[in-house]
Image (cartoon, rainbow, N blue to C red; front, top):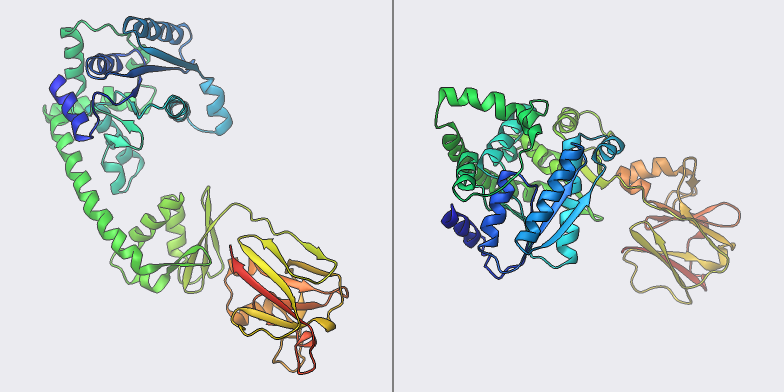
Length: 441
């Protein structure tokens, strides 16, 4: 056990001098981890979470770990949480709330006191239970690798060991620990798998844990190859336009498993499988439709999918009393207005207007339904902006971000970055030029 523990740390290049924070619940797993760490590390501290889920038992666990910290002469951190209230407020399970509270608090302590890593006592059996849980709930290949030994600042150096080996080590080394009686109940899904499901597998194969651990290793290696293949395909179908990722639908569908590829791309933006299924079924016949995750939205726009943040962008309105050189923030863009006495040599990306034809004050604002103007090149004909956008083949997000400049008579002077109203066009008689340019921040 000791040699394997030290080997797992060595593989991760964690030395005896590395300062670490050890998560200790008081159970046999974490107390064995504490013993191994105390014999190895030169600088470590103990952290304990009291989730207030078992009344006096939770308080007794906290007191026990506090006493053990004193015995080990270790720095000790503890925190109490109202876990049930957090779970209710956030509409998540108690187990998920406890996990979230635990890792957020541990990271806060780690960063504040400059520990390099957080060590937890997850072991081989925990990893097997995780994979079985994922299979039952439904998972892609990423749910088959179990618990990872290293995730960010979290280190799990006991994954080489199963529960029985840990319990034997505790007995042989006379390590004190507290028994969590809630682990004996089968109310929780993980406990049900541990107490009911795995014993049935062991009846079929007495070496089930060993066999399944090897399977997890195979799954992990297969996932590495899968990720490499997915990465190569992503590059061929994803481009970035105006800061937003876009997927070419034709390129996506040319792949052998387009549905899986789409899931792998959108899962990074918190889209679950059911939403991806709906989106995939809409690819060829529902342009303009939107799909939402907790953090993003995907717009189906003719031959492409556009991935956007679901956070509402601020689109301010500006009253400009006097024309002059100034820049204005508009979402992720910056609109630059300048007053000049000569035509610009660089017309690329610029709109040029006759300043003498413009009645101030002017308003710089997002477009709205019902807006119209008289585009240059249309012999003075009026056109609704909504129709203009269709002819320009603007995507939904481009329409949302579109600004116009309006004069004091409520006439649209120009559609920023796209077209000037012909009433404000420059001519050979123009003396003062107003230039308008939009740039991405």
